[in-house]
Length: 81
Image 1 (cartoon, rainbow, N blue to C red):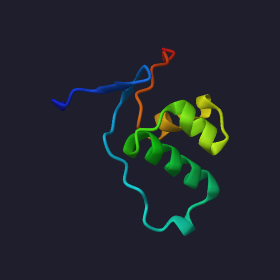
Image 2 (spheres, rainbow, N blue to C red):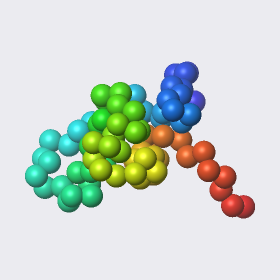
Image 3 (cartoon, rainbow, N blue to C red):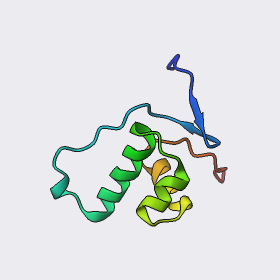
Image 4 (cartoon, helix red, strand yellow):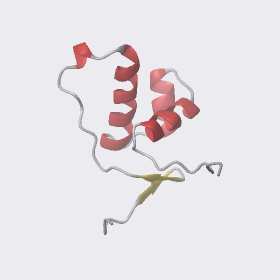
């Protein structure tokens, strides 16, 4: 277990303190480019969820869902047994 104290931002536990941006962006599918942009803006640049949503013209929910899917945020939802 890591001794690193989790950062809490906007009510979410941030799981990573750095996001590595792929070097060959032209080879990525559009959906992957959006996910990469979300992660970079949130983790590396410190942008808020609402700023990212506005900049990329998506919902804040989509930003959060992407950050969870990419392993940047801890999923707070209750999982069924």
